Amino acid sequence: MENSSAHSYDKIDKATFETIFKTFFPGLCAFANKFTRDFDAAKDIVHDVFVNFWHKRDSIDAGKNIKSYLFTSVNNRCLNYIRDHKKFDQNEREIPDGSSWENSDHLVQAELEEKINDILNELPEKCREVFLLNRYEGLKYKEIAEKLGISVKTVEAQMSKALRILKEKLVGYIQLILIGWALFWGY
Image (cartoon, rainbow, N blue to C red; front, side, top):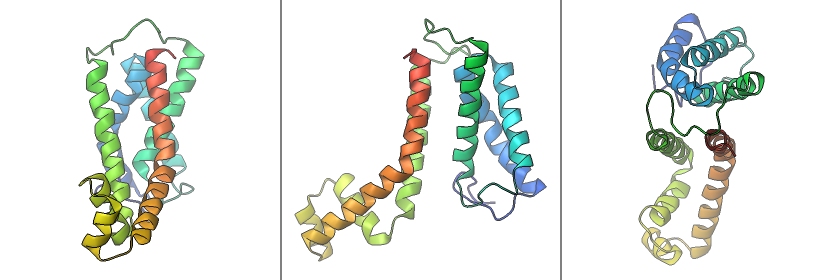
């Protein structure tokens, strides 16, 4: 099977479900544990998400990113758990397993970079090329236009398109990160 974080499926059969479960269960438990600070509760939440996922597998949009769907579902259930159990101690600043927020922050950054790379790989070729030349190689629009033999207006249009697509596809993901950050720090 291909990278299941970016792969969409026509049908979620038992074998595909098992692969998705084995791939994402540990990471989802760690993610949930950051909210609940109770690993047993985190595992229960993730288990419930997978049970729900299995029951709804035929109605879930196969074009959606499964990883995003699962993390969003776990996030929502964690928020409900916190609301219902009021176990979140706003004075604590360390995750119970001993990991610091900085370690968790690196995981979030890596996840965000992976998401951005997935989106960039989906961009049309010229759009992606213009974006990478500007944002990763630091070329000015005029330099990009000269290098690619296109007009500055075309460079502007391609950059605008790339930024619009990134914004659209990252908005929900960024909100999820901000919610987690705010809950962790007690805002």
